[in-house]
Amino acid sequence: MRILVLGCGYVGRRAAATWVADGHEVFALTRSEQNAKSFLEAAIRPILGDVCDPGSLRDLPAIDLTLHSIGFDRSSGKTQEDVTCGGLRHVLNHLPNSCGRFIQISSTSVYGQSDGEWVDENATCEPIQPGGQLALTAENLLHETFSARGHGRVVVLRLAGIYGPDRLLSRVNALREGLVLSGRGDSWLNLIHVDDAVTAIRAVATQELESIHNVYNVVDDEPITRRDYFECLARLVEAPTPRFDPAQPSARGSGGLNKRCSNRRLREEFNWNPAYPTMGVGLPAALKASIE
Image 1 (cartoon, rainbow, N blue to C red):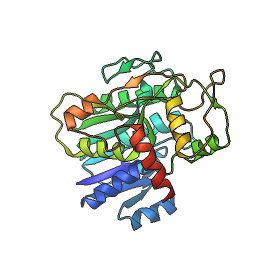
Image 2: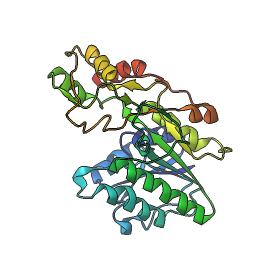
Image 3: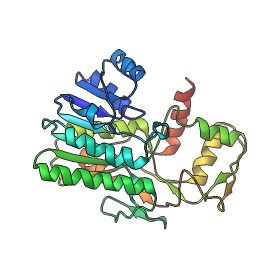
């Protein structure tokens, strides 16, 4: 199988590595010649280009599968809308007709629920944050484009907050310094270990899609409150018990959202079983991997 990875970063690079190990031919788009060199060393075929520059996408190779997992780089000089929606439009305008399956990495932020309720893929999507609004716009653009083409299949994976090796340092430092954390401690967090995100991607990439569904939540089995999460992290790194200031808006984490997301559909339809079903299992493993 020939696979194109757009956004070969924290999640995409790991997915690409597993596909290379399986013997697939993997291409990856990058704006950086340094990244291109590292891709070659990992047997990933680099394509120098930028989703915000449609001219650089004119010669995309014939591929069977596309993984679109581009995150927003604040140093790029582009707006989040430029990257999330404008970049996707450019990709779709130049996507080879050979692409039979398109996996879109979206976000559980498309759900705007804030009362702590459980939500699944049938829940109303009324995002209240700009990132969630753009993610939902991108999802709709994909569905409309592939429906108009009359061939190919879109699979949207709505990922919760991703954690894993090398993703915890800023949080650990804040806890060790005894900084007061902004936002509420009793709001719910939905998380997914990066390795489990990759197994979900691989499942929907290779298994037959007999279901009518094409949207899946990628979350672990048990949501956790922000207080429980940070208290657990503090214990693991021997930091002071965290304190919260609800009067200070949270720039990250809950961000005003407060819901519990279900992974039941992904589990049942793809027999997907996360290796780190709870944060209590995944967080110690992520910390250990970060220091090895």
